[in-house]
Image (tube, rainbow, N blue to C red; front, side, top):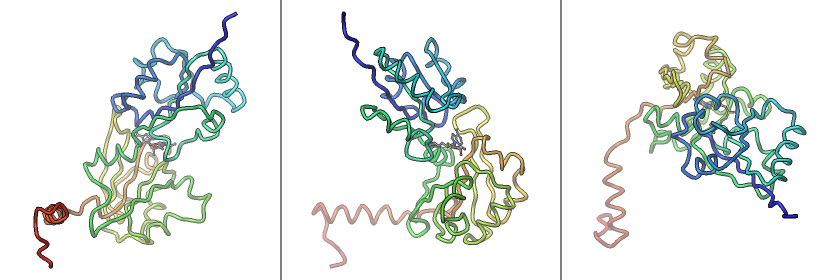
Length: 257
Ligand SMILES: C[S@@+](CC[C@H](N)C(=O)[O-])C[C@H]1O[C@@H](n2cnc3c(N)ncnc32)[C@H](O)[C@@H]1O
């Protein structure tokens, strides 16, 4: 009797929703899979890529049943794909599944953080304005010694996933560190139908957004806070960089010497 080669499991970054934002490698692997697990919101946007495949929402299963289904597919030699929301690096619920399969391959994806930066056409750090970006979630931070208020005091760019706070409550915490005129941008449903951006400030957040929508953690949105959203970079930095490079390459004398 022919032996069956065990199948392989892939964890593929699914990006913010639009399959055009998946990596080429990720799409190639997805196309070759016969069994796919993906959170339900990918069902519509990935309909073409998922067509003809056995497809399940992993959140419909308890862990034991989920890994049982994966194990039996792998034993039958089937390639299994698990679409990871956005990218694995930030707020991914799949570590307990990845750790079970040491031979798994993980393909990076576009995080909602990257997609928000692109939608806003803003980098999150600028010389002399913000040199760090803090990614956190008002929902999960309750389980850590940090608070949004404490992180706000760093004056870094703050990127908030999974908001569950009212505008008043979030603005009060942000005000512990950020001045009232600090820009806030709320980017919702990035790359999906109905994508939108609301621009506000820490001081005006309560007036500018609908509290029910704002606190609905299932309404896909990323909240970005910080001066880097509006500050302009001094273009002389560009020329300075060129001069430093030319000195390093021996094309130019260091005028400082
Ligand atoms: C469980 S986290 C997953 C994050 C994911 N690992 C990533 O890298 O983007 C879900 C949160 O990501 C954000 N998010 C995911 N997709 C989004 C989208 N298309 N537009 C805006 N925010 C999104 C929202 O804050 C949502 O509550």
